[in-house]
Length: 384
Image (cartoon, rainbow, N blue to C red):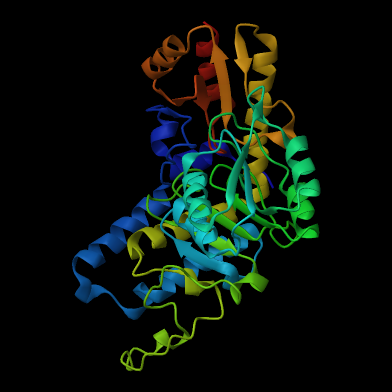
């Protein structure tokens, strides 16, 4: 499928096409496409005057958000629960999975705190060990991780970010998931830095629980995201937080006082609502755009931009690429060290290049609607 980047930008990101900003900060906050902005305005006006709302403006909004999230990760809709952020999904896993004294929750140094503190606290409360394997030259030691999975019978949970927020290192989810499944280890994935620039098929990748906020690469508002819970686990894991629609009887609005604590038989049991209808409607719209353009088309565009950055770093000895060169171990996060990172960052800001400095590196995170020319201009500023 061909993709006309300039036609897309003119429709969805006219400010980018006008050159108002070179936006390479999707690993922090993704800009909303025009269709999503328009929908938020329409829906927000109705919310301001709620007598204009109809029943289609309520629970069908959540249904559409779950449906589009499910399509994006190739999972049944019943396995999707709407979450306010990645942390909410990680906490679901840390608090609901069965592990206790003597068990190990295994992860790696370099994780974003949202995938560390929930496990650290939950493990301490249960008498379990939260173990972080050391980095080797900025990257996780995936071989050491696999050895631990294969040889340490105490490991009960492996919790990883699919893509590192600062180095851009990408784990092999298929291999790790298969190793965990073979040994009865729960595999939990923070997908916020991977989903969008990468495709994911949970029908074939062994993940037990996945958490993903939508405000970054999925180009959605703050305060919305989703969690995936493997279908076979849903009946086993009871929610630690309980919302008023977590029960199967909650759909009968004429019988609120007939209290029946029987859970939904799908992942809605993990939702704590009322959630933000405006923002989840917007998330559904942005995810619908991904499905319309094509996740494979988007992934190919991001990969091509990353390839361009790798070639640039190889040609400039004064710029060190921290992100792996191997396409199998990177996504959209591109991390660089320069002789003077603050000066490089200042040059980028002066040229209206949105970016971030993380862990002593300049982080560029271009998306599929960015152009080769924009990336070349930003990279040139790193090398000065």
